[in-house]
Length: 329
Image 1 (spheres, rainbow, N blue to C red):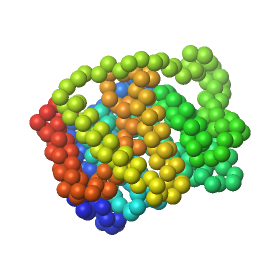
Image 2: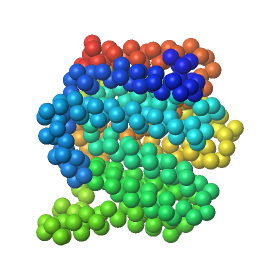
Image 3: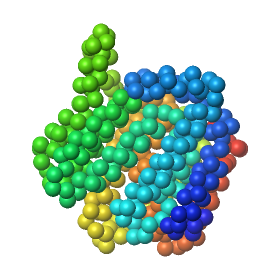
Image 4: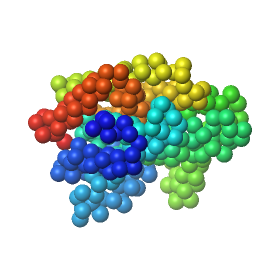
């Protein structure tokens, strides 16, 4: 399978789809119905209110939407890595890695705000790369801010990515205070229109308008299965990070900056679960996009080919064991 995904063959897109269906089949046999959590935004609440009547007559609606989003994100990430030449050769390994990673925990396959925000973050990531060496990027930077502001209405904690965006601008472009202010203006624009709406609707209150953000330590249930998932996340990440560092000197400047951007993205996403903490793993999903890029490097650059093959089959075996022999989805 690794040999197949190492090649950039259009038919591999179909193979990727089949892989996704096989490893995420329990999504459909045990449909999960999402519910509002304290940190969820008003846009997500509106989406649920719209979809709940439909899901009552079609229980597979939410799993189907979640799968479509996950597969679309894997394809988008794969295309992004190839277009930006983040690796020396185009392949389907980033998409494969993302589907494998998101199958390590059942919560990462639910229709949830972090899953929706992941799509927006991929868009933001693409726009950030587009600002490199662009003489006038103010329009793109404003769009980045607006996208991040919209993400805040889906998932309030995602506003913490503001710090990542500002640091990313510092990495990709010379520091210009006007561009930072334009980005912040873009972030506040959706809040401005939302404020207008609730004022005109006659329901104005600061409690409803201001995002509710708290800090805390997540309370997560420990288990051997969780340890196994963490192991299969961290080991390929560390190996992939080593290979990225090893090939960094031979990369173009924009690619080096790109990997720095992904690392900052990962750090921001790993801190996110400490904002508006919950007792689930859903919030950690947003770290899987940059994590998948590093995992892809493990599969691609591995000098001992059997290692990548063994890692793939061990991960696949673990996923099936979790689903059918372990706690299940």
